[in-house]
Image (cartoon, rainbow over all chains, first blue to last red; front, side, top):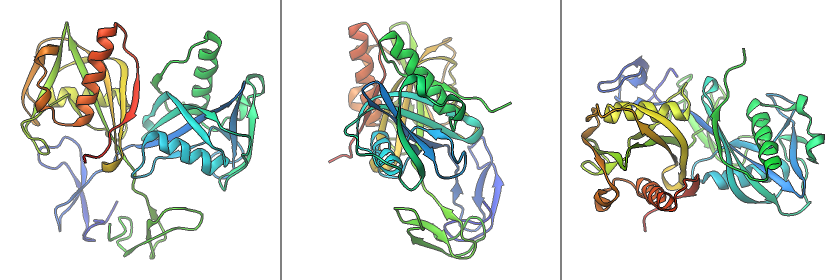
Length: 178
Length: 178
């Protein structure tokens, strides 16, 4: 961040009065510009004993498998974001069930949230950001080809809970790769 | 948003190729600037049968009571944000327990997340953004003086769960005032 999005003036990086962290402050108009973590919201669409995964058509992790998910937009709820992303990436209609995982990824300033969801029909297919969309049984999950660690963690919680016969909410974090 | 934070060029509001929503696009350097919802993270600090609330020293809702909470910062986890905000607003040390509520507030582009937490000692007091910090029993909660509807909703879930002897995670939304 170099220039003030509001007035176009030069930005300085300093701690504003009463604050504790350096912020981008405009010396022309005085506005303080904050940067904050982003939410990535997705779904685990279930059809009988299978779940829906998407093969990514874009970087990062092109060609790897993911749950449908993406950045939450202004003006929507987390549940609406999960429904929209599933429609965009997998052309699939879902009914949202319970929130299932909330995983902080502090080294990339993100929080990833996944809902369990019921796939409403089998009319799905790849959206613009997917190469392929398919249903997987537990023993078919391509564990070595999963795009992101929050996806792998969510899938591990899912099958662990399922084997115990009860799903609960999991909050946690995913550390930076070593 | 009028100017590109990166190069200072004029921004145009239009739908980029492959996108579905209008974004702020820089015609000089080509960068697309996204705006996304913000996370507000807080805690329900418990001490025996009481919980800690803060009287706000700042707008909005100056003079009203709130759970300690604030905007999540870059580089932290949701749990760390709850601990930091409780220290900043109530000078109180907590140990995080389970995530308890996640409430979307789409009309202000926010998601509010609260953790149950154990207050570690009684050495608390007002931080810069609080006028007063105090412990309340259920029958002492100033329901008519609660700052935000997500706080009231979180407290209602809390006492409802407590009366049933078990706490569970609550995801939902708070609609715009009529």
